[in-house]
Image (cartoon, rainbow, N blue to C red; front, side, top):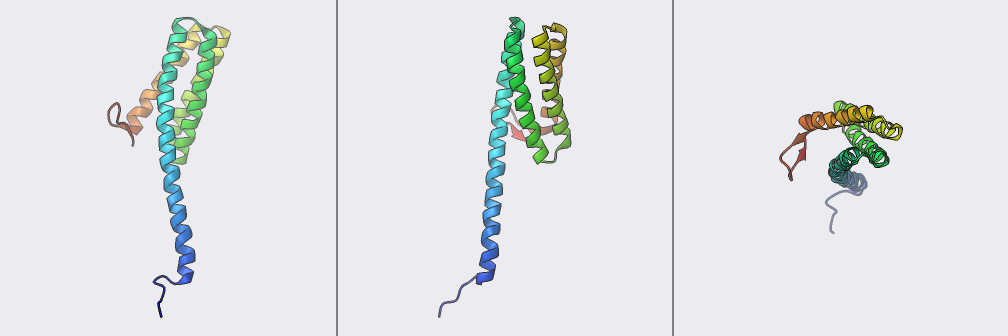
Length: 142
């Protein structure tokens, strides 16, 4: 008579645990893939904002700054999921500065637009120094 290697009760516990672990690994991998996409979008949006500011196209500045704020909100949620409070605070600062930039563009306030842009740019460097390893094309999250 053949006997099961794993008793039935342990099978009912082991299988769900393994499935949950597999799901968690997939979620983490997906989140890091999303994060990489957001970072690429952040960089591309920075270029669009700068170009729009240089050409005095305030409506484009506002549109792109609003998009930027949404990206930084997602970035903040990513870091919150990793319990990385400094990165959450940096992302929140970038989100707020992006919203301030959009409002300044709508109001035609060039000085506020410049200071908000400087704030966003500063948050990028601060977070990269603390949470990014590698070189262009092969960055990794610390």
